[in-house]
Length: 77
Image 1 (cartoon, rainbow, N blue to C red):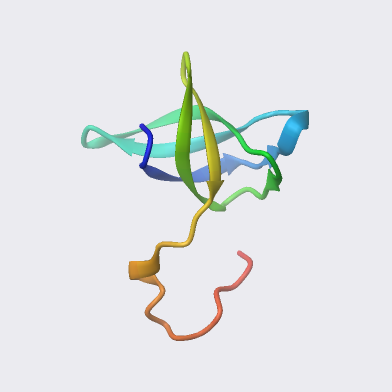
Image 2: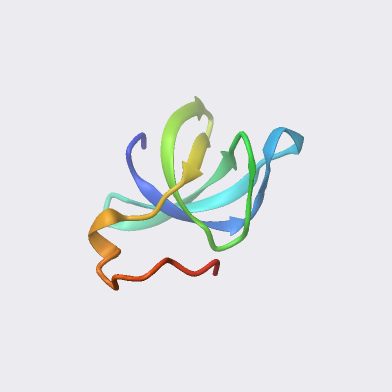
């Protein structure tokens, strides 16, 4: 899971609690509890940076550099 990207279905609340992330895995998609050091909004793209076991992961906000070809600043979706 580490190194995969996903989208938050439920925003994270930092140290106050996890959100939920949808990650593409093995030709399908799976959901995991997502923890982050800072709160992240629903719909944010994230990168999985660690696994907590039993379907829990640590994430950070992620902008795909290969998808940033629009030339402008990204919007806050």
